[in-house]
Length: 443
Ligand SMILES: Cc1ncc(COP(=O)(O)O)c(C=O)c1O
Image (cartoon, rainbow, N blue to C red; front, side):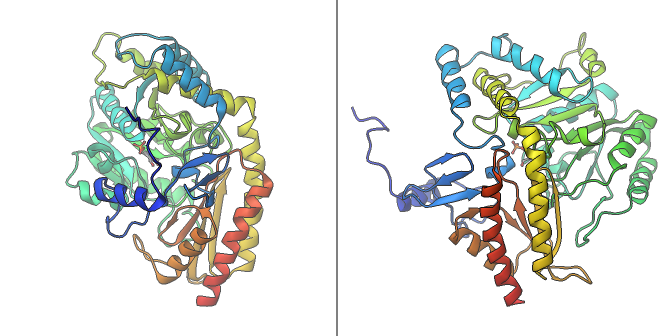
């Protein structure tokens, strides 16, 4: 009997056609999407079935942090699949035991218990549920410039337009002001940003607020890096009012910013932290919410309010353990700090050279280039939640030249795998340089 692996391989056109005919692509009008067929990947590259190679300057979804095709992770997944592919979440097993211990060592401060999920959205859903149970309060404060996941609760917590389709959403979510407003080159002064949050806490009534949920460094909404003092200020504000601080590090965690976790840059310990993506470098799905001891203790005598068939999946846990070993063996956190400096120099050179570059930001290998019509006043090259002919020129050129990254609204993302070399960074930025030259001429 023929097996799937004996079957004649599909052509690129057949892959795209069948995927479009029978599967739905996320966050897209289906007629508008033109997916790249992908057959394999190694290191910082992936390629199509016919062999066109792409330099992956976005680590897929800012998630394949250690790079593609690492044999150490693949071997750990295969070994675990052979030994014990699945165990229900009421059972204890070795990968779960070892990963729980390892995360208790790595996670910020005294966070020492985790609840495993399939991904980031479920981690945030559970974080909010835990915070509400623990505090006995209902409201959760979150920002507009944020993404927290696509499920009902996480989509309500999300501030960007992906929330609109989920509305009216779950009750009790209230917005706090931004520390970096759309259409601005620079963040707001720290004191002003914090005063805006404090006002909302006062107007809402602190005794009604369970948690403030923030992406420590904002991801898809613009790689927004909080100015020094902001995270410390949020921590102090929460402490004054018995509000829990939940840091969403689904994208910013696991080395992306040059530290294990982004909060480590500011010495802040959140009450709950959510993680996914880089935890397994996306080789298999796994997320988690980590909590401090007092919160874990709360559930000693009370029912823990969450459950998932794939909670603590053995293959996910084994993959995460192997991935964490790769970060450690290859010194990827330190390497990211060094390569982050190289990225900063490339960004600055592009800013010097191209008048269409309005702002550049990076922390570690979490980077972005904002394009503008004019720098003064700062006029983004595409509107909020929109695109423009010039941004389409950029996207088309990058794709033709084999550079894969997200071109979103007025921005070009620069988030390669953390194993990238200086030469590979130069290769990617040379292609971006060409694309920006086309925009300068078009303006
Ligand atoms: C900051 C942040 N939180 C949560 C999520 C949702 O994670 P998932 O897609 O694994 O549910 C994402 C996904 O991009 C994210 O970037």
